[in-house]
Image 1 (cartoon, rainbow, N blue to C red):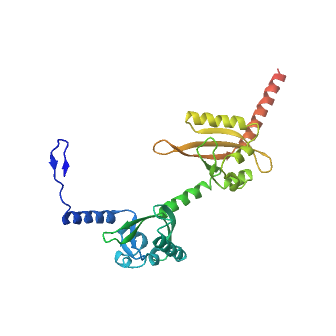
Image 2: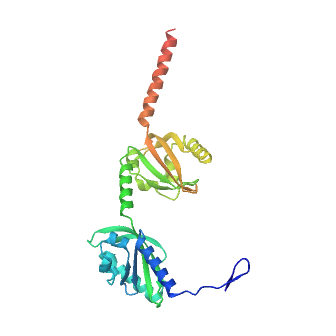
Image 3: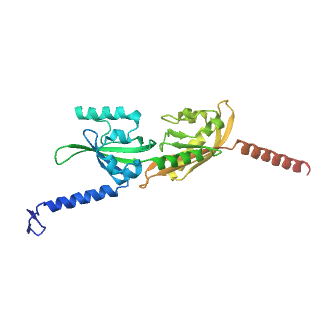
Length: 289
């Protein structure tokens, strides 16, 4: 028995068979309407649920999938042994490496083609005490295709793009391949736990100025922009335009710094020639009275 705020007793309604049917219908509606694939299997690896999203993604009808071994349907042949081994280990020891985690791996459609997916598995116990494993699967094909298109576009730009940790001592997370043509160093040289490599190839006379500009931009919350000299693999000076901005999440927390390096050596050479020409012209005018 429960009580309202006024102290009047309220009787709790018994949970009837009608309630059970309503709940079951509600749950079925959620499974049917889910945009992600929901696939359930029992302890023997037999499919017990295969929702419409799974039908669309993998190409099996629900009637074809339910009652068959999951490993034979959507697990690629080269991953089946590991899948079976993991299932047996969990049933024998209660220990699993994928339960309660999100992992990315390859899955297989009915026609044998592979697709990248994100998988999360939960363990449930039915009313009869039977163990059921429910997999929530998201098709990553479109996301991976978009990432490839973006990376292809980025890697064909006449500049090097990078992504750094948003920190005082920023490690480089990504550097595009153009950097090797620009400075002679492979991408791998840039990736590390800090920015020691980067600072080692900034011209010694420019390090202090660039660091100060970076700190000022971060403090003001504005994009960083600087022109300075770097030393390529042969020790030659390369002028670069370095520009970056902090990418933030919906709450304003910094995620990473996204930027680019553009070789402006030729531009600087022409500017120097112009300045020299103007200086000589001014000297000539003074000499001529």
